[in-house]
Amino acid sequence: MRAFSDVVYPAVLVAMVAVLAAGAVAYVAATRIGPTPSAATAGAATQNTARLARLLSLATWVARGATGIEIVGVGALLGAGVTHPPMVMLVGYLVAAVAVLGLLGISRLGAPPAPGEAHDPDRPALSPRQMVQADGAAAMIVGAALAVVAWRLNTILLAG
Image (cartoon, rainbow, N blue to C red; front, side, top):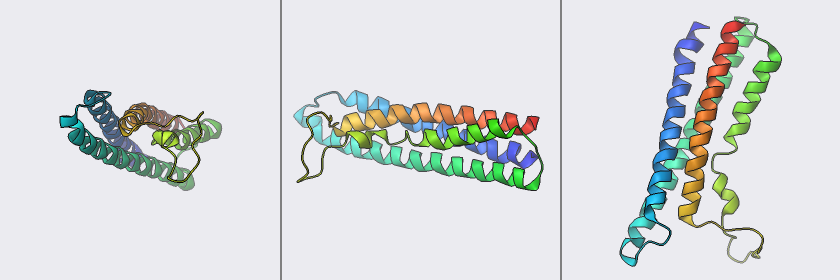
C-alpha cells in the first residue's frame, strides 16, 4: 500500500499537472494567434498550431499512461489482498478515470471531411486553431478531473 501512496499516486499527480499545463499553454497560445492572422504571421501561426497539436498529443499519451499505471497499481493491491476497499466506489472511480480519457482529443469530432467525402451542412468543421483551443481546454479539464480521481482512489484504498 505504501508503494502506491508514495510512488504511483504522486507520479499520477505529476503527470496530470503536466497534462493541465500542456492544455493551458496550447489554449493560451492558440488564443493569442487571433481569429484571422495577418499574411505576415499566417505561416508562423500555422507552424505554432502544428507544434501545439503535437504537444497536446504527447499530453494525451501521458494521461493514458499514467491512468494505466494507476489501474495496474490498484489491481496489484487488490490482487495481493493488501486492502479491502468498498468495491462499488472503487470500480466507479476506475470507470470514471477511463471514461474521462475519451475527452482528450475531442476536436477530432470537428475535423473537416476527408477529400471526396460528402460535406454535411449540419456538422461544423473547426479550423486548426479552433481544434487546438478545444483540445487545450479539454486537456485542462481532464487533467484536473484525473487528479481528483487519483486523490479519491488513494483515499479509498487507504480507508480499505
